[in-house]
Image (cartoon, rainbow, N blue to C red; front, top):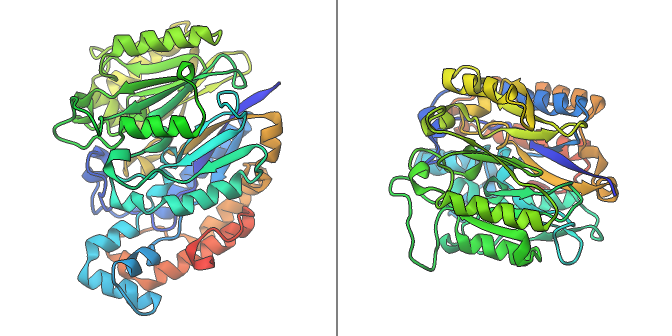
Length: 446
């Protein structure tokens, strides 16, 4: 059976702005109140999608959400027509308006956790939308995320969709940003690494400065929902000290692909045992585990956070070697750039680097890995995916034209109070659902 890893990248939404909402995300908070360029942000993302599709990788598009969220504002007591709701919120609670206007759904690594059919007891591919409970602006995403996922992966024979876990801190779930799957081949049984920041119902070490967003209890619940057995799961706690340095998700400090884990020396608590358990369980699945550990002496945690070296994509080429996809910031950091040169020439599994300009998203706290949700698919499952979302020459041209038509080239925080921005967003997304054949996924369409 032939299988692929497909990437579904978040299309940056029309309200992309720098409101600095994500405490613990250094890039997000440090660029607070800068003017953004939604049009450029969307185009930078589309260029990455198209470039990877042109290299032969399976690449899809994940639609953004409608913002500001009028439904949320109404639930918080703002009344009147849509324009009145926005004006009232801008006057009485501008911080709330900024939260419900966030385009943070572009970080589709947080959209859901995905378990391929080769791992699950029922042989189906499972999705659980992440509740993103730790941040208000993200906690309102999952109802629409679930509808979009069902429109992308509609065939109930192959795909099973689970609603988000209970929206409480004890089950804080940040999705695939804290999840990595290892395997010999994409259709072979694998081992899924679930990474958490703290335990909710028992004592343990926790970060002191920034929040631990993801709990062990959430990891265990998703594994149960997906029908994963004990031999297919490893639970690992993030190093709380690096969370306090800005490593708000595991994908800021490590990335995996097939049997390779590319990670920092300080990624996990009890790191030696985590790596040993991965090696043992992957060996039982018939695969040799390869851990590429980056020493602190060569790349500090702060340089890793600044450059987003580990918020990269590892992609398997036809010859079995891997490409690492990194943002431009990696070449602008002397230590990281030197390490990448050493990595590529080392003779190891990663022998090529691709660099993309993603400055608009990087300034809001996310790089190549944040922008994509990975889904391992068999040929039959890939054929069951909504074909209108898969990147090709025609879709690339159509979406660029669509962005030029509907997106502003500058957006400041004050612009969020303009009701016409919401009307522009509705018009754009209504057209997008027709382009991507998603149906009525947005609240304003229902």
